[in-house]
Length: 127
Image (cartoon, rainbow, N blue to C red; front, side, top):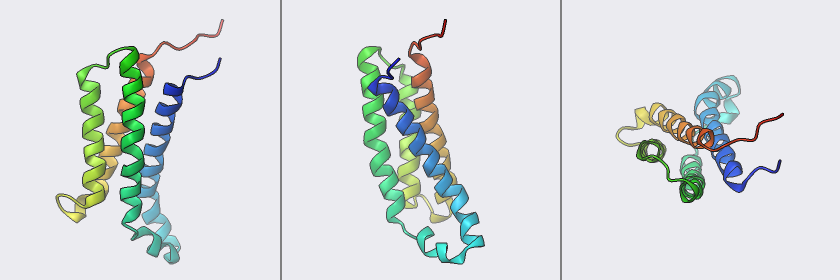
């Protein structure tokens, strides 16, 4: 069965959150092993690029689902808090030292919202 556009959007959003997590958690390890990567780890534009991709993708995926079947307010709140965490981490708010934990938490919350959204939809069963 052909997956719907909404399913693809949710899968893309979950993948983007996973990529964000890998960037936040694995890049410091890679930098320790290969110092040349240290320059790439300092590129602040990468964090803003993740937020710039995540926000419209998340909004589109959730809005398309909402049009078919209204999303519960806690799901919207989970996604909003996740996006806020990504934005806070990307801008270094409230302090730069919290960038990674705030970004990781935001990414996990946003991915959780997409997983919840995905699980709400009926899925075909194999018979």
